[in-house]
Image (tube, rainbow, N blue to C red):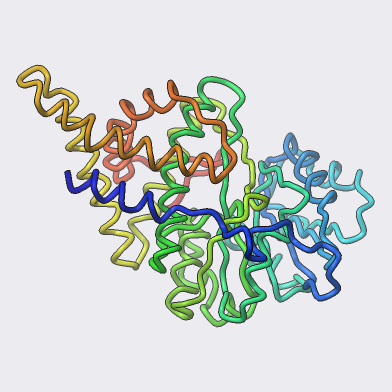
Amino acid sequence: MIYGMMILFLTRKLNPEPENSAAGKLPDVGSTALPFVSIIISIRNEAKNLRALITSLRNQNYAGGYEIIITDDHSTDEPARIISEYSFQNLRYLAPEPEAVGKKRNLNRALMVAKSEIILTTDADCIHSPEWIGSMTEKFSDPKAQLVTGPVNIIRNDFFSGLQAMEFLSLMASTRIATELKKPIMANGANMAYRKTAFQLANGYDENFHISSGDDQFLLGKIKNKFPEGIRFAKNHYAVVLTIPASGLREFFHQRLRWAAKWRHDPNPISGLTAVFVLLIQTGAIFLMFSPLVNQNPWFLFLLFKIIPDYFLLSKTAKLQNLTWNNLDFLIVSICYPFYVVLTGVLSFFITPEWKSRPVHT
């Protein structure tokens, strides 16, 4: 009951940018006051995605000027050859360096050579709308804004990817709501922007290099501690980034294990409590799902206080992020989600996940 009432309350906090605000409109791409922006991307064995990535970034409708810095984390699929096909003046490629192993170290070296104060991060398996840069950086017109996290949609191209897209909506809803309540607990490196000075003052990835994942989570926490009022969410729907789904169950499982593991290293007590709360709720949901074996009443409670509130929350999030809603996907995810959350939460303590043929150190 408490969970259902809380979800319905939080759903009311999900609102689009007001239409009469500058952030709710298409960015003024003709403005001469727009800042130069540096986009930094760490890649490892992403040759199959590079052409789509670079094309979407090259076609940005942004008058302020920008550069793209792609830093190579020891790829074995010859990304330099693909990148050399493009004559975009501000496209830069940083070849692998022996000491630069891991995403954080590669993002760090890209940031060191970036020309701009405004840094945008994304991933190689992402596609961006032409208005992405303007939509993500417009928040920095407020001098208090230090880090902006943005919406991400998983591309739906088959049944399995549809389920992933639906499941991912819960993370996006949590990110949006927590940031609006000025209690940010999550960010996504596939769509994030920050001031370089904020990164430096917060000591960037220092003390976190040994942990393979969590570059976005750790940086969010550090900048939040340094600038408590400095975190924003880009609600403009032009800011949505599309990302490729996991190709199979193994990749999906290891991805979620990586995400579960990084919560253990987050020093923010709210993040830890949130993780525990989610685990307890999903455990309770499993018991309620099996309750008809004993009594029908708990099943009704599961429907009333879990399924229906989740429906309102996720369908509203999907609408805000221009994601096509599918009732069948929602029903399947609602049934499977509690089992998968509990399983990955427990196994993250015992299984070392992999990423691009590397063990992930947690």
